[in-house]
Length: 416
Image (cartoon, rainbow, N blue to C red; front, side):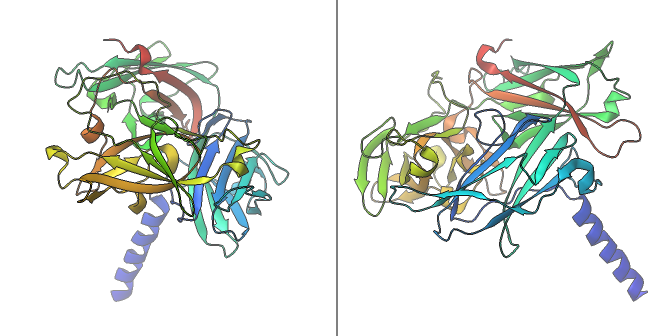
């Protein structure tokens, strides 16, 4: 009886491990500026067409010129491991060393810049669409970090319209996403069960909506016109700074100091919750590495200590506040936490970031770990946000979830 109980306990543990959703692994402190993109300028969460290239770049600040290796894994719609073996989704081999790297040039902070491009001589192509995970290992076979990406096929047109909430309680603070899926050269069998969609705001998987089913059909079209089920908090335009010239004050920077590295002190920010909405063009939380004096910003842009500060108010007392953005893949970490300075009477945070143009905002992390993105910035329906809609389909008898369509929409022209 004891052995039987042990067997069921072991089986339950294995089943949980196999079918658990995969989470991205964050890098250690010496790995910075992970730039992951396909054929777009976005620096995180690539969504690329089957056959397109994929670039992964990052810096190692330990100065060791270490070797790093990569593997690629395929996943189901819900980010549980697929049953496919590697040869079914990958032409060539992975678990190869990243061969392209350069050391920094003329910078105070030394670093090595690594770049991986797929396809390459060893990893020739990805055969099928779907969810993928890139794993980066060191020479001791220790996992350093992971990043998710998606590959799609063009078998369906995806219309994306952004509307104001129909709920009067949220009409000023939320945006809802309406979706129309029109299959081009494929018949969608039993779409309410076999078609899944993921809706992603500003490349942030933390807030993605993935539980939508078609509300109704018109002919072969699938229509999604939900209200609360497809609604996102609208947020506010991101704050930003630019330090492409590290020796002179740029946009958003109040003062500069040089110790071992340059220190850039940003203008103190304040809560925007109770202030009127003001349109301020941003890049939806993204960032771009630039250096005005460099021929190659990848290795000539320096690392700078960026010092953030935020004025407190009664609503923010005893709150846990973090700096938030795509610069670290929207991750809440110890080094993004704001600490209250009793002398200057402001919240402060310092982060080591590579020169460039950055979007950021302040968020509150609740005691249960949930993130309130509007607690400091506010939520305004007019905010310009980017929305990606990814359409998955698993036909009868198939063993994996294909991505058959991809669409994007912006709330710049939001309507009622």
